[in-house]
Image 1 (cartoon, rainbow, N blue to C red):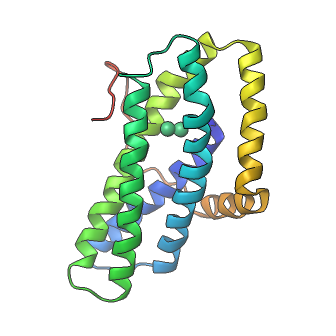
Image 2 (image 1 turned 30 degrees about the horizontal axis):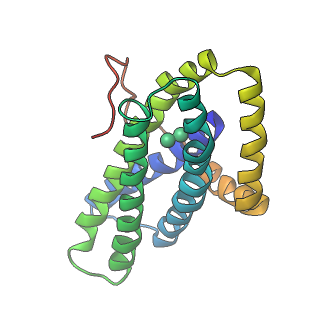
Image 3 (image 1 turned 45 degrees about the vertical axis):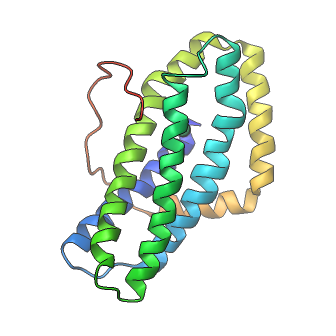
Length: 190
Ligand SMILES: [Fe+2]
Ligand SMILES: [Fe+2]
């Protein structure tokens, strides 16, 4: 799961760099954006969020984490926000390709929104949820999750996963925005 986060981060950081280019009026590579949409739909959402929503969050609930409130409800809500932004990215990319005058600014805002949402979301899971899971899940839980994740991988398709991971790795991983320094509290998405 953490390895998937690194690749998702790679893609959204690249989108953040495209946002800067669009803001400066530089031409952007629409085919890269189309592949990023595919990556975010299939890899970040169907595969990664699928594992979290179908198996990982439910086992946390089984071990006593509340299903409502922080952190699970907030994280699920952020997955929803991500879907809306990815749909907007697909639409604004196509409008940009058609040369619509308002498309660059809409595209820039959506790219920036995706970077901000995913960086913060991934940070919450890495810094708070995964360490909590390591404390409360049993060895059997972990083993069962691993087996369930393999089923999700197969459903998405190992070739598709390898192709999308190759795309994510092909993007330079230059950091754009620093991560929050510490979790002052449980900041759930609103
Ligand atoms: Fe998540
Ligand atoms: Fe995640």
